[in-house]
Image (cartoon, rainbow, N blue to C red; front, top):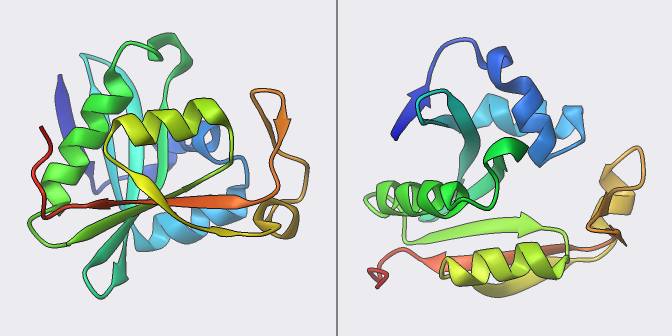
Amino acid sequence: MEFKRITGDRRLYWQLLLLGDEQPELVSRYLSKGELYALYDPGLVAVAVVCDQGSGICELKNLAVDPAFQKQGYGHRFLEFLTDLYAASFHTMLVGTGGTPRILRFYERCGFSYSHKIPHFFFDNYDHPIVEDGILLEDMFYLKKDLTQKSS
């Protein structure tokens, strides 16, 4: 398993990024400001984008695991790599997601806890309804992780 920071042509990762976020305009916006990482084992398995939000806070904007590799621990290991990496420069990592129980449980198992929500985010920022696990997404739920505490 190998983690790489991508500095070259980011378009090569576009399809996987759109799996994690269906709104191309939003992906383009944060991709231009963030750092893109890829996980290979040995081929491409997952991608992630992390942005500096200022004041010691970074935000995981996108984490997408190829469907053929989901539920095999790659997402957890990728997130562990990113939180360890960003702990050197940041005290908190945020992640925004829809309110589906499966995704919220994933982040909670990775040490994140509820921070806040932005009402109507998906209705206001997406050009089509977003349905995840059969649930129409409306609000963006933010979770946070203290990067100064070493996870067990």
